[in-house]
Image 1 (cartoon, one colour):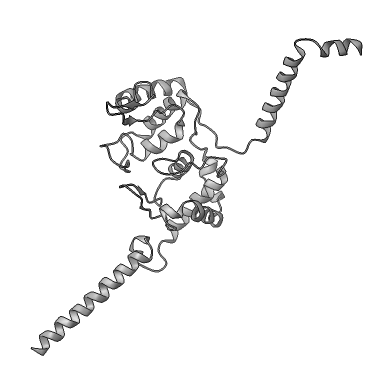
Image 2 (cartoon, one colour):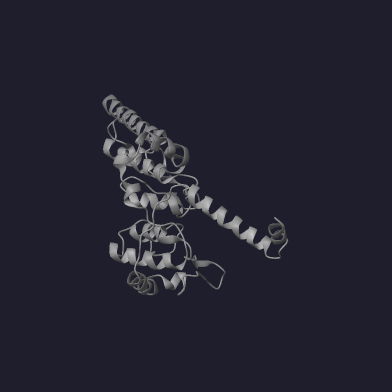
Length: 266
């Protein structure tokens, strides 16, 4: 007991206790952390090929080291890509938003410039620059395991105010807009939720779990499968569009009747 008491007053005792506490805290965090989508494994060849693609297609705006560039007026030409992760690259390049054709309020979706292999290589290079959201594992994209009812509830609470309840998109301020989210590949929907492109907030695993994101994707696929039960959808933009169509048709009929009656009176 005397020997143990003597060791408690040793100068290194506090350091040992601190190290043990850190190890215990790290172990508990690893054991209790929420479920996350698994990252893809990339080879060094993928990273090297991705770096070559980056220097040829992206470095003009994002810098040779992906640190981002600012023009002479202080405006950002391209943001830093360090830490954005593979998911951001897969979404932006896979949907054709990057490389951008021209500057504007928002990068528009267009046919992708790179094929799937090149996109994967570019994602591998950006992922090697710093930790960030990974491309989700196939398990979280399998809509046969999703719950469309729960996904619809999540979507209406978190997304419908911009994308509308039917996923048709909508206008925002200063020339920006929320794009349609139907007809989009599941991994790109997942990547958008995980990375928050453009004006979209980030829904990471602390906000929406991978299974929640899968449920949202399932709901959007269900919307596509069901179509418009009422017939013509009128763009699924809600009562404003429907009212405009009705008034246009009704007023046209009334004007036509007035012209016809006037012609008969003569």
